[in-house]
Length: 293
Image 1 (tube, rainbow, N blue to C red):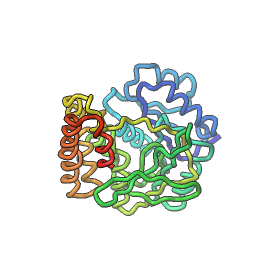
Image 2: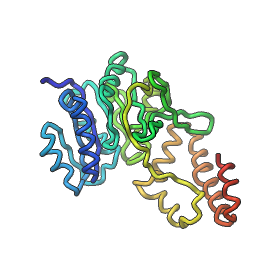
Image 3: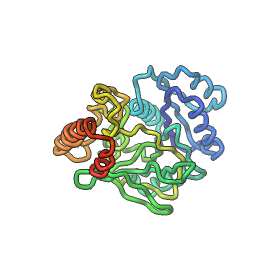
Image 4: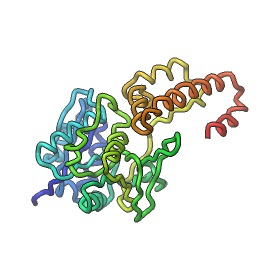
């Protein structure tokens, strides 16, 4: 069977069982036979690539040395697919499991207008509550948003768990900036930049994928965590608090004033509340939580 000119890009690192479950999901849905699948294995040492070669020999495997992170792996996959003449590209995280016909629905939405970038609505497989969709910027805040079933929801940035777009976007805005956003925010900033160039960003409510939200939560309400640990997080590429990504995320979403917002919200206010919590008796902490909300 001839495959459609669609390339699904899956970045992976040392999560063999999760990766294999993702590929098995694509196989059961018929997507593995219908579309080209690229796994970008960024230096896994757990036998991920070997298992894929044995179980799914049609899957294209690209490799890294462990320094690609999410955005670098996505970029590498996009470059390969574009050189092969891909018409549509799909980002897919290996812990995100598309339901039957979800990928087809996303492709059809993109085919209706090549200036559309569309993301699936992710749900927790146990609770069926929304986990990932998109974001909007409102005032001085960035808010997560989700699409209702059968709805298309406009947004300002898309989570990269499962996203589809036409490959011609590369000719207009190039590839995601992996040096600035190596692990976090490469997805939402790339799609937001595309929106500023005239693309529509949509979350498709009837395109469902199961994906748990297990990203670490950053909270200054944990006074047991040492001061030094919070500070070190600013300089770790794999941390959600990595300063280069976080600062440029705010700048992308809010323009020049984003730098001031970052300094105030992520540094000044964070550390003021952290120090306050450190010296505040535990029975006052619930009140502080209400203040943060």
